[in-house]
Length: 253
Length: 268
Image (cartoon, rainbow over the protein chains, first blue to last red):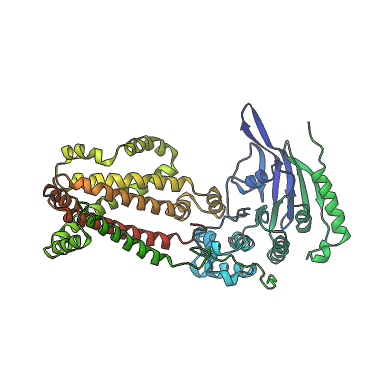
């Protein structure tokens, strides 16, 4: 359970302050898949960093299961756009990284790592170095690595932003398949309207200057989300609603 | 199980070294180049330039090896270089890490490093002799300084250029400061440190010969210095070639270590 209450974040800029987030309220229930979409500068990455504990809000409350967030923690896994794999470690060692920090014994580490590497379909590459993997494969390693420490929440910052359109569709399907097997609360940042609608229970549309929530669109499409869902008129209708919400925002003077 | 149908994502092939064209192997070209250089030298000495020819230098080299002079000199020089170089690296790596990790430490130390960097270590030899006498200490000290200064800057550079995202990734996986340091900062900056070590080794050799010009009883620099008094060009050539070959061997060894330790890098 994530609760954001009147979260503000401002950055000092010469002769003024930049309002990255101007009072955001949001509740996300357990095992929900929420996507956040919005134009650049709407503060969506700031929102994620605050939840991850990598940035502190200027004011407001951030609660995870009722406890205030004071820093990064293994209850919240983060998946970065730039993969952020440790290039000197093999796929397996990358996935084991957080387990070692938690003090999980070696045999247990190996077992858990193997499970999640298999879950993202990379068992053939378990002993490969990241430099030998494609972008999509790297991101799947990052997903396995985040899952391995068993967080209740996954925070994903435009994870598929750097891969090509075809790979992206496959990664979306795989992510949902993984999520349906291993349910977690997911907050997924994207700038891609299709992706936002395809993945989510709820789409949070954000607006810029100041960064805020414009509206929240419920997506009542059944899982598993197959190609059929993606091509259905219901999907198209939702997509159109979110599209116009993102692309035709009223500008606050 | 997540369904992964026929993994169409192709892993990127390791970038191939060398050119695209099928050309003469580079090692063959290296050999050709070395032979041409020796031929050029031979031609110059034959054309009347006042330098010894390769056979003369070779036979002098054999003489010096036979009577044990060259071996003793090499041992003396290598010992000085290694002592100074290793002490320099051992001091530079922790200092560089501290400077990169703690901005106040950097602010305190950096002016001195930048200041001493502008002074060639050789310029400190007179001072070192006055303060430390004419034994091994001043020689090793200036070599130490030369390697320390190159290596500390490289280490600092390595630490400050560690990707912030990697540090954040470690933090969100539950790593604390000391494990981030050990498991992220040190491996991420190792390529910089190894480059710094290679540069440091180069400056160590450069400093050695001049350091041996002062009151040494043995060493390649000393041998060349005394040969100069007798106008003994072949011995000077033997000394020069020995220094070059030894420096090259040490550099190659470091390069090999670098390749092994940093083969995980995306590009090189």
